[in-house]
Image (cartoon, rainbow, N blue to C red; front, top):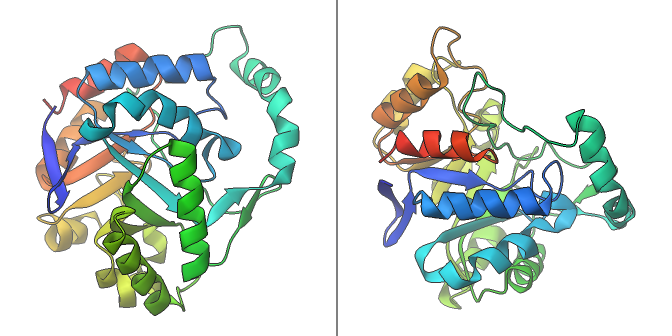
Amino acid sequence: MRKVELVKNIQSSALGFGCAPILGAVDGKTAKRAIDCALDCGITHFDLARSYGYGEAEEFVGKILKKHRGQVTIASKFGIMANWKSQLLKPLKPLVRYLRSGSNKLDLVPKKQPARMNQPSKGADMFHDRIPFRGADMRRSLEKSLRALDSDYLDYLFVHNPLESLVHIDELSETAQQLKAEGKIRAWGIAYKRSLQQMHEPYLDRFDLLQFDNSVGSDGYDDLVRNRGTKPNIFFSPLRGAAKTMKPDEIFQQLFTDFPDTVILSSMFNEKHLQANASLVR
């Protein structure tokens, strides 16, 4: 698997594994099999958040990656968290998965596309709450992530899909620098929807790394190639809004050509599709 250096001395596989569906739409057995397959394919970048899996994904993934910790990069996010209601949902999740699948076997990837793309949560719902984007909250959330992952550090800590301007950016930046000095994070970034680019623009240069949605043929794509084609990025939703005349593998190849130093996130739980996607970036 081809590697990219998103931040100095931190290397990731060009194809990243999106963990958003784990212990939500995807059961533990399927998720573990997919993660093991991803590791076998050379995928080393794993994207998490406190909210994923109704608050349970970090611990689940952490146990699988524990013995690989030195060979993988783990990103997580703060700003959205599972609330107490999510615990009530836990015993019902297998039934919900069954009803959604329409059968005992859950095929998570449409036959016409090789992957379902990872997307950050839109925000709070009845099972999730937003927490303040403040330095103390950032630190508390990180500590919870580290305990869940059973890790001393995160490679990347992202601000998770802020829907309003980060008015306390100075405080967040100062906290991030402190966390780096303490060895608890190696870098920090912001994960956001590109539709909110203008609102976030004044402080994007304060982050080490940007994570946002992007697909070939989407609005502003050519400008993005000119402005960020030679810079490190992380993309989610590379098939959403893409040119309808292109096949999924062509979209991936075009993205990697236009953005050679970028990681593309994909939530992949069908092993054949996972292997097919990985073969595009060897």
